[in-house]
Length: 220
Image (cartoon, rainbow, N blue to C red; front, side, top):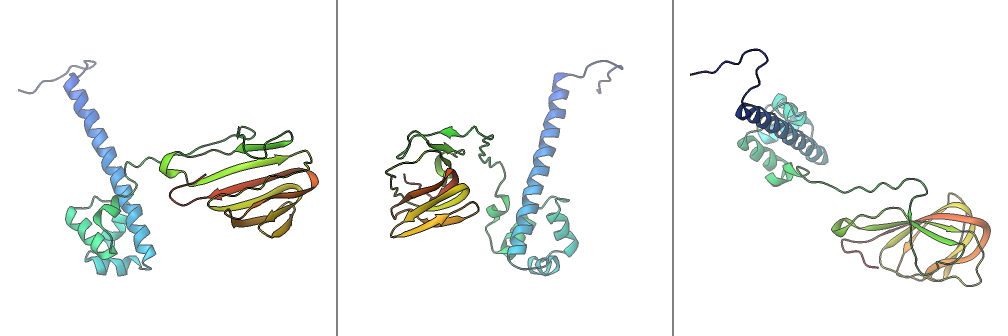
């Protein structure tokens, strides 16, 4: 027997739950279609194939592949298997990015965390420009400000590759047995294993950005 609700009468909780579940399932389905669309197009383009060429390789119509790449249709397991085989990737590669949250760190201007390191003293300031955590931490970014002369400068050595970009002032920077005069707009990229650091502060104040990239396992 079918129940009828008068105008203004609230539906049963079970009906509300069913409607919410259906909306959630539809939303998840569309998200999955979008991920597959992005991955399929990404791998096809990486292979240097047109939509028509890829469709022939996979064994589906050009129109169907176009719909898949534009998230306009849901793929059957058979189609997904064909698609993966044609792209020469595992089926799971087509789901990469689904339910995969990635961390981002936003640091407003002048809000970088002040850190203490070798060379920290009056007139030498190091501001950290955010930092990811755990396995995703593969780089360090610092904004360095030098406002006072020093008689002795510290030398640094560390794992990874460092990029130094000059923003303000002029200084002489040493790396190994070489020295470089850096002015605004100049960049210096080097192996962090060799001793490096400022040798002479020519024009104050000095500001530069330093970014150190590590491998999968950062070392400090």
